[in-house]
Length: 191
Image (spheres, helix red, strand yellow):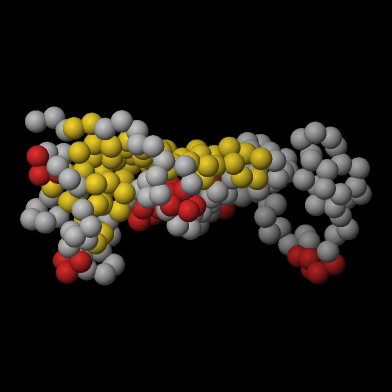
């Protein structure tokens, strides 16, 4: 039996919820867009503009339900070096197992409580978790971004800085000439 497909659902108050009606007849597949992720999913690592979700929901053992799918999200944040707006994309696959609350062990990874009386599956937790795990900690517009001058703030990719070189810190003077990082080592010198 092939899963029943549904088209993208219109934006709703709870877009990260899937109705479970008809699940006993076979797997359900849904695709939807979360238009306001910060409101619908809770605190997120980046200011995502949207999150596209594709999910397949099927019965697991007993009263449990398994959901798995993919997600794609986009955010615009500042480059950590030059502060220019930079687009960031996140793509991930995810899976979650939903069990009745009495069968969920605290700290068990990938397992969520299923409120059987609601008739809905709340996907916000697993989606939020995947966004936190897959979002980059540091965003750079490019690998070779020169950043900003720490003294005058000029964007170094656009023009050369005219600031004088920084004065050496006298506290490091005792280490000069000690050969800390600039000495050459040959293979014969390695024990």
